[in-house]
Length: 128
Image (cartoon, rainbow, N blue to C red; front, top):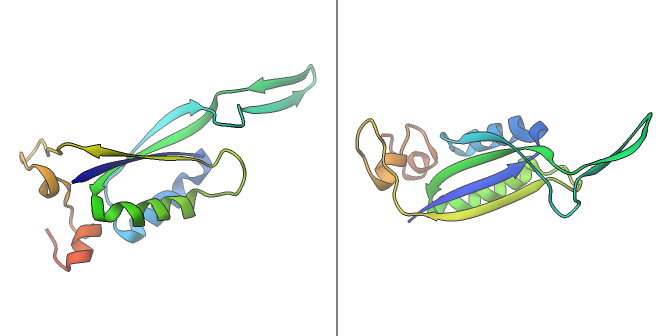
């Protein structure tokens, strides 16, 4: 089966996350700008006119589709690279994916996810 990892992270951690994922062989991903807040409810800023609350903080959403057997290593890598230790480091969600289709070739499933030198190719010792 295939999974989708959706990670909401701080904007300033994206390069660390991308580099760490590339090191383990995660080749494909999408990144989207988003806004939101978690338990902390946002942040309070002080200015000349007093304090004010910002409750929708800028974040990035990283989406990765991968094989089940790569999920744990990928999640550990994202957590290690995205962690600052402060509130608001983010969240990771994992979803089942019914199918994957590469539009150009019509490949389905695992074959549609394979890239040269990706995490699966490194694991099996083969290249596609």
